[in-house]
Amino acid sequence: MTKVLEKGLLTTKQKVLAFTLTLLTFVMGTSEFVIVGLLTEVSSDLNISLAVAGTLVSGFAIAYAIGTPVLTAYVSRFPKYPLMLSLISLFIVGNIISALSGSYELLIFSRVITAVVSGVLVALSMSIASDIMPESKRGSIIALIFAGFTISNVIGVPLGTLIGQLGNWQLTFWFTTFLGIVSLVLSIFILPRKLKVQKASAKEQLGLLTNPRMILAFFIPTFSIAGTYTIYTYITPILEEGLGISTSYVSIILLAYGAFSILSNVLAGKIASHNGVSKLRYVFIVQAVILGSLYFTMESTIAGLVSLMLMAVMIYAMNATIQLYLMNLATVYFPAAKDFASSLTPVAVNIGIALGATLGGYVVANGGYVHLSWAGGACALIASGLAYASYRMDRKQVLSSSEAYEGADY
Image (cartoon, rainbow, N blue to C red; front, top):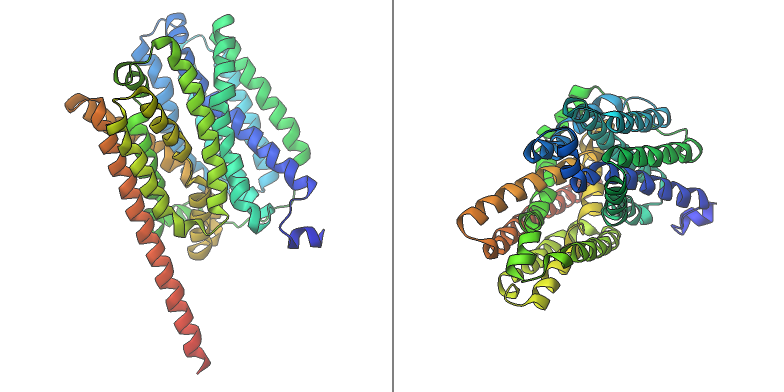
């Protein structure tokens, strides 16, 4: 066992744990995103407008962004094993309520519960992976756990949408309930029972957000994701009107986009495993170039598709590095807030999605689809600047510590 850990290899238990946590994010991702493909059915069945049905998506994102850090700060003082099982059980209950919903009010209530619980589960999953996995494998394992969300978009959402269209939308939530039960059963046997718990008040943990270093790091993924979603929010009209692709092929292209985004998680693991923070500024420059390239490639169907697929490869390239970086910063400034820090990346991503969609809407209203590329590229360059500033601060802190240590020798 000692030799395995020294070599940075994963034990069988660690591999099964990684699979279980990835399955959990896959289930949560399916539950979150599947509603997008069922909005027409939901609006018709509940006698609400499509715009009101759309709040089931935005309401989930808002509840996730606001509720996740607050609840994580409150519950992180409790032992992780029973806490995880309790939260997964609440997730299952939330999906059951969704499946039984006969009104918009009950459905939005269940979505809010599911959103907040999902956010905390993601944060705890990342924290557990960081505590259990060998240091050399943490980046790749965290990237794998994040990949559960990506895979849910490629497999879970289309499957859930198909179930809802062949039967009814409530049946889809019975499907996600079943997936939740499978995750709960696995978690009962696989999750480690004795994990360190560092107790701190919610107020103390939320105080971490007043730390300038944490704020700076928080906005790195926000602007990176905003860059992609400035374009991705309008990907369907870009494909149809910009690249001249028939509507019947759009779903196939979106499936391909999802498949390419899985590669982004593989890339994220490799970056995080090799001093990822030092490379992030270059990663975002590459992202900016790819996003900006759409301005030139939109004249060609093939070239435009290449730009979009490369955009998919870059979308999550920073996730694992940022996740580890935020937790490491918390370890330095306030160790008891590590679980809270692990909740911040998904929150930053949700804010980035909202920012990108809003910015994209402004650009489309005032300049047209082709100019989305410049706006997206600008966001990625801002992320690069923030990453460079963080890296410079890290270097300065290391040099200061080194000089203080050398001075102490004399």
